[in-house]
Length: 434
Image 1 (cartoon, rainbow, N blue to C red):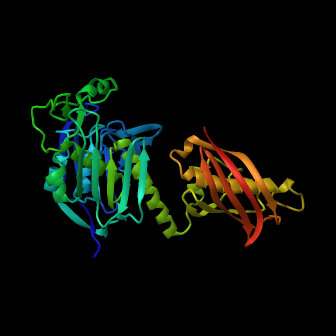
Image 2: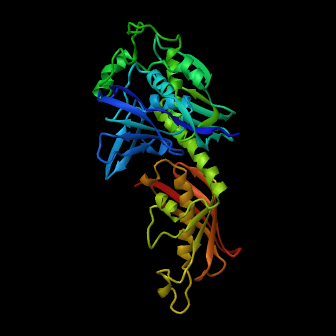
Image 3: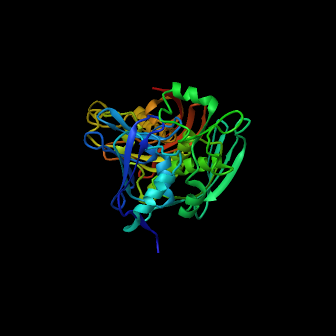
């Protein structure tokens, strides 16, 4: 029998100040229907805007993970959500509304313990819908400026973490835990966030840790821990990094079954890694559902608009390798009255353009922030036209990536109509900032 989704049985709340904003906040956990997910609610703002805890809503990763949504041209945010998300994930809560009367959850003692205890005391209830989880089918990895993250297929979520600081007190630590509610409560929940004493003034100068204190974090000096309270674990620092990573992994939007191995990652790299895992999930999901992208989805990636968006649907996509798209050619195309009167034929340059747009979609979908990038033709070689394209035809474009180096992309393209070759070409495109 598949596991069922869960929500909290009763409401529960936590109050305190946010570690970075210093704002006083009361945060309430409330039951939510099946398939709601984890949703943060800014109850202090008009309309009570909702921010789903999803990787696509991450807007900042400076010393914490901040999510936000655009409401009328203004980004509404909730700062530092990772400790809350870790507690929710450990208890296998699928659906919950997290309502706040300010913009950051309370830091409390710098750990997840208060959130975990409140949620556990509120009780959990199973719902009618089955849990949706992602059992990783293949290895996903990320190397980013000395940081390494790898996820291997596994039957449950395990996190292994190594930290290694250039500091006389805070040195190398390693820990590994298979995540469950019992393990989290016993081994991870009470581990506190930490910072180096030498970084405190710089963080304050950046407008951060306004609510920080020795009661809300472990501060590490050159000769030892500054706090009067001793460490809760001998390796408390790496345990807290596991807690943070669990919170960030929760932004995937569903439980993950994988062995995640991290070497020196932080929120920035964690978020990039979750995006990679989410892309893999989305690609697999699209293949199961049939057509990969309709015209609305294409318009979210491609900058082209009428009358120059010449791709109607993406049928297949292998990330960074291959793409198949179609263009339905109708008599209403704006170029037919002049090309040619009485004998409408689609201009060859527009067939090439449509082919290039199909390949461009593959490229833009594989990069972060495609809205900040434009693709320009850098070369068109070995072009051959084999048959005319006329109203009523459906052009099928298939492109494969030959190389992708330093922003220069080379692709082999073919266009067919009813299985007959209409055009082939080798295309080169250059990526530039908008």
